[in-house]
Image (cartoon, rainbow, N blue to C red; front, side):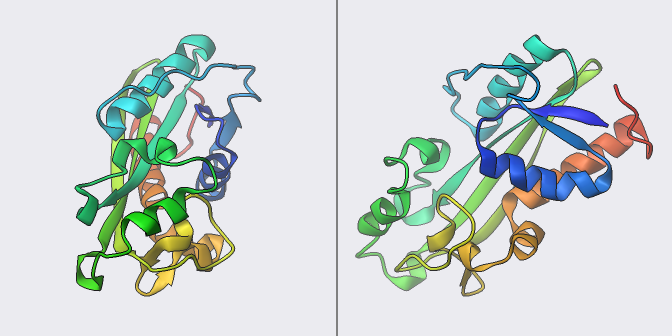
Length: 196
């Protein structure tokens, strides 16, 4: 099966390929599909933003499209940065901005979760799948892998940035959502993943 992922984020694209390619799903980037669009993500939920992106790209390619919207929800910050995670701070300063806001938050109140919603659209319809990964916000950046908030998000004492790609994909919000998406595709298209 071949589909287009509605994103310009190379990290999201890489993670999706790492998980779905071994399952027989070929993912083209927007650029590879000849699409140059960046719709305004003005939804109030991850699902709304994912569907906005998927619909904009589907209109241009008329083949199966997926789009991911995800973010970090910190309990002590009333769920922020949430759907604004990508716009919460200047690129590259997300972790330091978050750590500054949380500097007086005690350890037992540093709970957080990553949320991922993936929208899909094809000629037969559309839908969404969602998954999350619960953890805590650390006190410093640790690790060299991953991206975004991975260096400060602790899962069982280890930051996502300290994990290998396989370790992270096994427990992450995006990995779980992509595996759910694969099951949806298997139900829709059967085990052969025929092009639709």
